[in-house]
Image 1: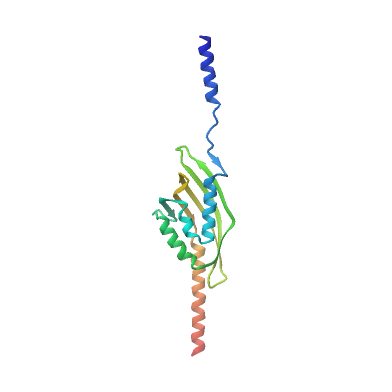
Image 2 (image 1 turned 30 degrees about the horizontal axis):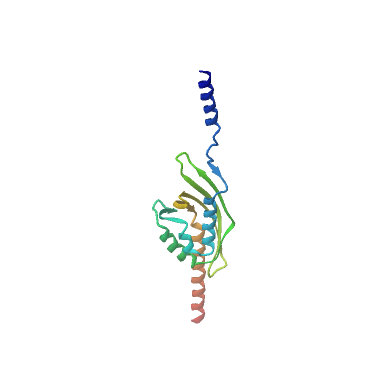
Length: 173
């Protein structure tokens, strides 16, 4: 009987000594993927950008409606045509968590800065994103930022161009 109790106690001790699952980290392959994602955006490397996402990934950017990575790439190329200088100041800050359901998520914060083409207007916007990973690929993304600084910059540029046109027309009269 002593042996059975000692054996049961030994099993209990060994079971309690297992290392807990790490649920939070600031370094992981998934975090490196998000840093690479931001580098691809800076370099306009849209072809490589697509390789970071699962084929059926869903992306929510400032919307409750999802889009595909193809949509994001198309919109990125169109928007990039309007920006002369595109960078993430001080890179991107990331943390990874594994939640109670076993899902792997990377949260990121970035300070985006760009210069509007045709002007010296600098636009700066904070971006907050959350990426879910499965099998090393992004399967879901939620990204949010304030578009107002962009709208104001484009409005100022349009007003300036209109004023210049009006002045030119007045001079020609």
